[in-house]
Image 1 (tube, rainbow, N blue to C red):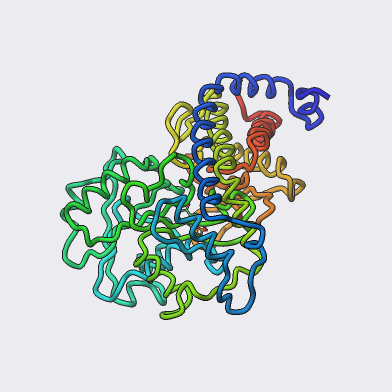
Image 2 (cartoon, helix red, strand yellow):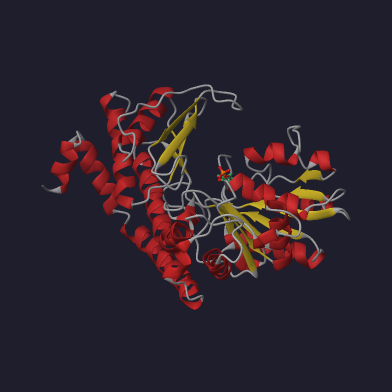
Amino acid sequence: MMLKEYYRSFHIDEKVFDYCNQVECDLKERFAGIDAVCEINQLKVLKAMQENHLSEAHFAGSTGYGYTDDGRDVLEKIYADVFHTEDALVRSQIVCGTHAICTALFGNLRPGDELLAISGKPYDTLDEIIGIRPSRGSLAEYGVTYAQVDLTPEGEFDYEKIQAAIHDRTRMVEIQRSKGYAVRPTLSVEKIGAVIAWIKNMRPDIICMVDNCYGEFVEVKEPSDLGADLVVGSLIKNPGGGIAPIGGYICGRHEYVKNASFRLTTPGLGKEVGASLNNTKAFAQGLFLAPQVTANALKGAVFAANVYEGLGFRAVPDGSEDRFDIIQAVELQSPERVIAFCEGIQAAAPVDSYVRPEPWDMPGYDSPVIMAAGAFVSGSSIELSADAPMREPYAVYFQGGLTYQHAKYGIIMSLQKMVEKNLIVW
Ligand SMILES: *Cc1c(COP(=O)(O)O)cnc(C)c1O
């Protein structure tokens, strides 16, 4: 069967297929650029594995306390080498990205310290950790204060306001690399490096922490290459390569990683305990695949932006912009289109493809939310997934795709669903 016939067997109209295929044809140069970054990152990861003598024996895992777990320790050395940091904490006991960030914050901040966010309000799940929304056990309850400087309307760091916000008690600066689900540009590693150098010049004692979620391996450099003291993220996003079933990482300066480890386990025990169970092989294999998987997700995002831009919708980032994370937003302008889009992504999934997503009132959100995900790892957003709050401008956010071919098929399916409901004007 030829490709077109395959797509026909999936009930994709010829017009939809031809249009999307033409869009793809025009992206060859873009994709070559993504492949070039991927190749460098692949070698970076491979080099770290070879230099640390990763071997089959390291996959044996440990139980109980997890003392002398060589596989876990070697994997942490590999992470430290990939991110070019002194130390790393890569653990199954870090349950998600939010937990990794929380551990880095609580481990390094003390009563009387101030945390300063300089890329605007951090990711929503940090509200209750910081105490932006009052919550039991927040940093605020422990006497850690919080200040925030928003990005300028152009999406740049506001150097003047940052300078004014820094004072004696400022202990840590938080920078979020990805836009997450906010409407602002994602920050390049170069821009993050420039602001960190400027802060360090003024106040070398301030810890610069980067929430690195969704940014890993999108560029050839990581924020830790340009001065970040801590980079933190989730293993069910980019660096887990779709293989890690759980986990998070904290890479950075030895002292700060150690402080985080004392929070994750206990003061004194730190990194010495924490059984890897049977996860070391999955973490290592996931890291090995991560540059390629990230590249696939990026290609899917670029493809989607161009498919929908070509039909008159606004894509953020737009079809030709440089990318600094894997998230793509498309403003679909109507609830019907948002639902059709998510139905298409769901119908294209390898798992739960027969399920039809519907908007629901999710706790913590001010409007109904619709989500599409059919993942091997529950909630994994490095796998093809989409979500959208049901409100103006009816923007759908989607990300991931372990293979580009799957991401492409998902996008084509999303358009097919809209065409079937007469929601597209060609
Ligand atoms: C996903 C994400 C988080 C939180 O990670 P979880 O694994 O969902 O807890 C934090 N910051 C950003 C920018 C993210 O994208």
